[in-house]
Image 1 (tube, rainbow, N blue to C red):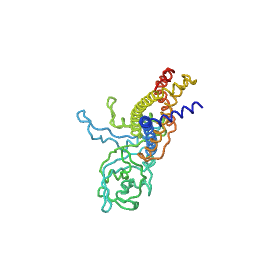
Image 2 (image 1 turned 90 degrees about the horizontal axis):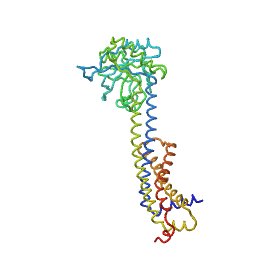
Image 3 (image 1 turned 180 degrees about the vertical axis):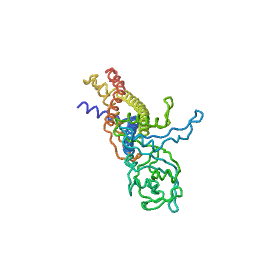
Image 4 (image 1 turned 120 degrees about the horizontal axis):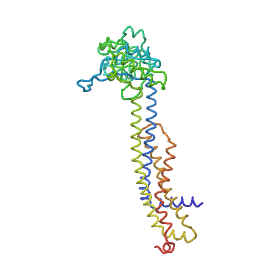
Length: 399
């Protein structure tokens, strides 16, 4: 009963000092809302990254040529040293690498009737679809026979399709790629925005890209899929050993190629987001400290205004512990009220700004309530002790 009475007194103090109380609650609410915003945004980002990782394909190494050097200075031009033989040797001589997918990409102008768009044209093999989790939303991927025949067939990314065909169908139509006629045999599923714009590209057979479009015999990239995540180190060792042997590199020479896990970039983005989240949470904690100072200020003013009330309570039998409990509970009520406002504000803010589904991070909501109670207790401790040590006689004479 005493606790409920003190809670009631705490709510009354909010009503008797509305402006000070609101300003104090805003300080607490902003801090809690900022924390929840970062947590929810982090959860949304985590889900998005996981979706991207699934879309990229699992257990895949990306092998690219290294940049060339001129007089010891790195240039923007890559070495032209990856070949189909490299891809075949890796698949044939590694115990853990199950599939290799050679590819070459270049820029291209895609035309249909009076519309055109610039896009990346990627020549690859049929195995690309399974290794990289690339599915055709309509139509099909090209076949091994079309690869051998250097067929002029292509699959359009979702963005390219939208630019050229809008809501219409593209499968079965013909388009021009760098002024050469191609039949559209498939439309790729949309993968969403990423650092490499996966929807803004066109796929053709690798032989077609090398011989009919760009006149090259080297590769731009090799994808190497290994059987399980535990075999990453062995797969990496096999790739380096085979390519160094094929490229006749001496022991004192650096690799002329780069090998990365395909999820490397997303992992880097995730780590960056974690660091940014920590930074924002620190700022939010500063806001909570400011809110705690506001609670302490409100409680000190409340003690000054209620000296006579404190004296009467002491005179009718309340001991110092009861007075301390009263003001600590009142301070906690302030903290919880601010925290509740911050939680509601954080939920609404995320729904409006991010526009994603409503996510309830119950663990962090619980943490937020505990933090608010802790801030209230810490901020109310000194005012409570000051109230408890007021002389009863002086308090009763106070006007």
